[in-house]
Amino acid sequence: MKKSLKRRNFIKTAAGGAVAFSIVPSFVLGRNHIPPSDRLNLASIGAGGKGKGDIINAYNDGANRVVAICDIDTERCKDVVKKFDDARFFEDFRKMFDTMASDIDAVTISTPDHTHAVIAMAAMQLGKHVYVQKPLTHNLAEARQLTEAARQYKVVSQMGNQGASNAGQQQMLEWFGQGLIGTVNEVHIWTNRPVWPQGIKVPTENMELPKSISKSAWDVFIGPANYVDYHPLYHPFKWRGWWNFGTGALGDMGCHLIDPPFRVLGLGYPKDVECSVGQTFSQDWVADVVPEGCPVSSLVSLTFDATAKNKSEVKVKWYDGGLRPSHPELIPSDEPMGDEDGSNGVIMIGDKGIITCGTYGRNPKLFLKGGEKRSMAKDYTGGLLYNDQPEHGHQRLWTEACKAGFNSAEHKALTSSFDYSGPLTETVLMGNLAIRSYNLMDDKKYPGRKKLLWDGKAMKITNFDEANQFVSRKYRKGWT
Ligand SMILES: NC(=O)c1ccc[n+]([C@@H]2O[C@H](COP(=O)([O-])OP(=O)(O)OC[C@H]3O[C@@H](n4cnc5c(N)ncnc54)[C@H](O)[C@@H]3O)[C@@H](O)[C@H]2O)c1
Image (cartoon, rainbow, N blue to C red; front, side, top):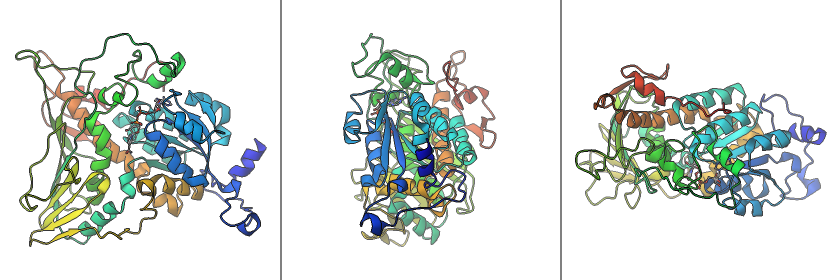
């Protein structure tokens, strides 16, 4: 404990107060030697799937130390356990914090969406810096709470929308800031997701838990959600298509693709949301609605007020499940839109021109009314560090900000701390609130199929109260 407290003096503490520096100069230790005291002690929660990249990038070739790994599935996370073989392993993050909280400075959280909030809140309450995968949370109320908690507990936070640290976003900010496309009033965003089973029936077969998952670990997987028995249509990866765990196509890609217009136009809370949702029919006239599952496709339309950066109201339209916006006049017909293969993309339409990009803000292009077209220069960095590194250094920048401390210049320079990514996530989850309201049925009518008016500050739909059940969720007993 004593040793750990001494070491922790080095890593600037949450309060960001004076730090007792006693770094052994590197000429004593040799070139490139990082004094152990200058390393962050990291824990990875959810170390399989995306978590593997998150913790390896945060480890940053030994600039930091991985002291704990937590995963509910010993098979899924085995690569990370093997790579960091002196880290302690846990299947329950609560036990991990109970056992060794004082040895941990910061955690990466890469579990399914429904457990981000409870895990991140537990970490922040202990003063741990947090890197949380996107979407930041499963519901709107959790996003607001985490945003406030990061300030309250004075921790350095970052959401895992790594494209935010990509030079492409800076390029778009620059083009828009120079007034090149004028005022934007229309944005179109599309994705090829879902690319996992979605809009299917709830599985009913009894399945044995795989040997790599204990009964108590499955209970931790479920966390605050409604209890269901294990099924391979839930874990791994496929939890995305079920509201109990995931956030569908919009939750999966919204934080990557809505990020560029949200940032470039400086958007705030939307003021209304409207949607239409794809249907399938296996019998005449009666749609196959599965309330537990996210739909096969959706089109969501959000309206935002004018902002300090963009002097017009903006309509942001989201398309998923194979739907795509039509090709704007100004973009030549044979020019691919968004990603090279057109699978995902963003189009911001201004009165003087258009900016487009693909996933993670990649491949930004500018089309002006006079016929001029511009792409991003290969060596453009937009002043961002580590652009050539995995995921543009998004996790590495977070670890450096953790060392510099809460409110440091490094912290303020982060592209997706919760001050930014909380409201972004709320915007994404507004779409899901509309999608879920769309299929609410009352006496064979669908009262939620209308424009829903949103009071962002109060976090409330003002013209259809039933929709407010999707602002938050009732947690399973034992979870807060
Ligand atoms: N930023 C990106 O590009 C990107 C890409 C993929 C996934 N993601 C996000 O990462 C998160 C995980 O997605 P995935 O595709 O890796 O899912 P996954 O199911 O493949 O992996 C999740 C991992 O977390 C473990 N896990 C599940 N519940 C846990 C719990 N309560 N405690 C500890 N471990 C737990 C699982 O065993 C597994 O190893 C999601 O939020 C997803 O949206 C982000």
